[in-house]
Image (spheres, rainbow, N blue to C red):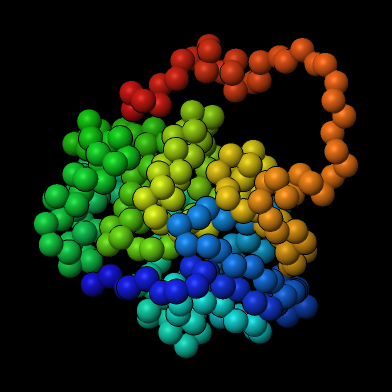
Length: 259
């Protein structure tokens, strides 16, 4: 049974702190995530991004502060929070021996959902994996595995999904595939909290971006708001050269639609 949507932000974090002995990982983190939006938590390795996600997913207890997901407190209503979320880590958690469809059917059955086959077929269609659904996952490309991993996390229609550095280690084509999948999640009403260390990823996907540095949110806003923090750009005539992405896809072709 799905958890009904609550009022207010999908995620609310206030004064979150976490330390490991003398190492202060989080030093008072505050942010809200609007429902149906993509929120990027940007920071370098060790900034505390995964720690925030683990606390919000009830996998780790905070030392101080409060956090709520879908209207439920992560400390006192952990079971309700778990019913409301799905977590996709940095590496695809798929069974390579099974086919893509079998992976999806397995998760649907473990969740005791009716018509697991129909659920699997719909997710394969949604993530452009129908033709690959009968193949063993061991034959999938990195982008296809990641899309399958994300589709598995949507079984049961969780209103909030955490994507912890979802494109780590992927090639340029696979990253574009995953980006498209994330955009489609938000378009369908799912709230996405995305952690990343890639600046272009946050710029491409996020409705709002927060930069986590040394355990604190040092800036939080839309891309336009963040750009406004810098002096206005000078208007100069510059001949636009193709980007590396333009060159890459011109040479290899855009194969994302055929996978």
